[in-house]
Image (cartoon, rainbow, N blue to C red; front, side, top):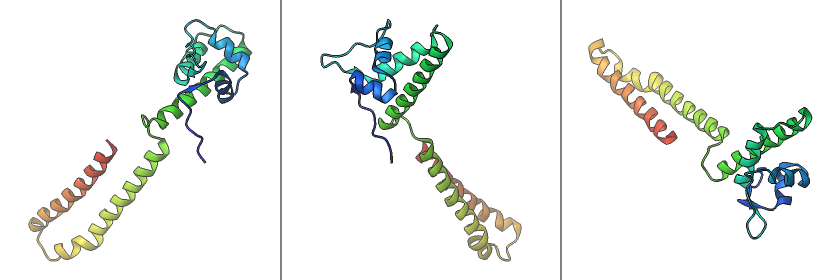
Length: 155
């Protein structure tokens, strides 16, 4: 089951729940210079808050324990940013790419074996090498066109 995509704007309570931090800690992060301001409905743009917190963790001068906690929050923000990009279709999940590549590899493997085992032998039977070359070239070109079609789907 997949998580619902994060909303574009959320209240402080919703943001704190999503980031798994206390609201007081979120308040402290949102009172730093450069923090995004809420709109008239007191909601914040999720992407802007995530970016602000992620930037804040890099320049942190807190003690070690608090710095580690802030780094953890920053990593959660980065994960949330990736979820937003996936839901906006600006990114493709690695699982989708992997599934597509495996399917294409199976398809191309089938074509190669089908050509070698059943399509080419009857055509090449008893022919001299000079006559085999054009037929093999034609078969190879057909296979390459099939691979280019798959490449065009990826791009």
